[in-house]
Length: 210
Image (cartoon, rainbow, N blue to C red; front, side, top):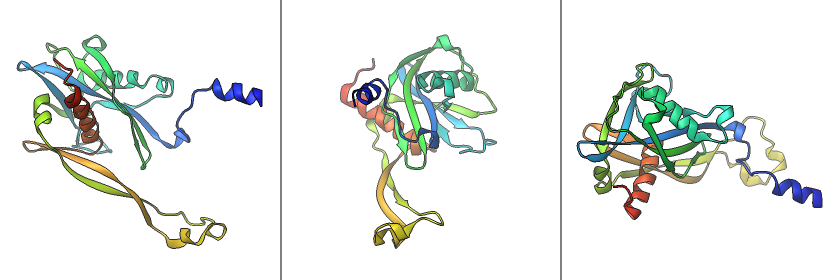
């Protein structure tokens, strides 16, 4: 028993069945422009297989060697997607990570991009970028909806060995909030809006950025 105690206390707990998740990291980029702090967004290239034309933050899949430091993924992807150098990005710190029942784990970070940098988006990944003043989001109240989360069992599931109520089929187990921010004709929603909402909530409560 003592050996088990040593073993468990010397290991770092991790997300169970992490191999079943798509693990990614993103950067919420802040940049000073027109005399105020602004949030930079990307519009994904129209030729991408996943979420073409949608608004997002720079980021991507965490490589195996970066699982212990996903912030490196966020910075690396920002460098590649925005055409800036590593030295032009100041990593500010982490936000709360997101776990989706659909199998996504997202590590978001806040970073500051030097205001005098020239951004040259990668055309393979980014259609365009745009800025929104932080103060806009401080004043805005996002629309909110929700997604039902439930279960649907695979063929061959061993119902005969489980309590009868599991045979009822599709069951809604809970709901997830979904936020929507409008800025002109642009709609920011989904995980991007969720990360933004988390950041603005922290910002609004502390008002720490000058």
